Image 1: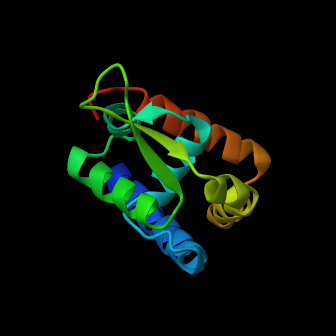
Image 2: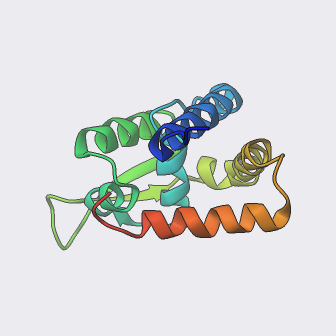
Length: 140
């Protein structure tokens, strides 16, 4: 039996996850394009600047700008001009985002459980370790 390419399998899992999250987050006006990743990162790193957010999530600047704009429009984040570098914006979660966080985390956890429901706890841990090992290389 021929092995399926790893990239194909990861892409498939990613698409399935996006479908699950899009459906679950739609009622909260959090759209696709990784908006959930941006919101989660801003919630965990209040005051992060847009360039650091782009680098941390490995998206291009245009995708970051669109997602930040949408999250701001929907009241989840606010941009504050960096007093040390006026060309830079610092991103902060709003009270709406902070209040939404417990629900948001439950949705993310439920999505992870759906993706890993056929794995044992040990297999899930092993998968995480292996994927983290792949992700740590900056050249992928």
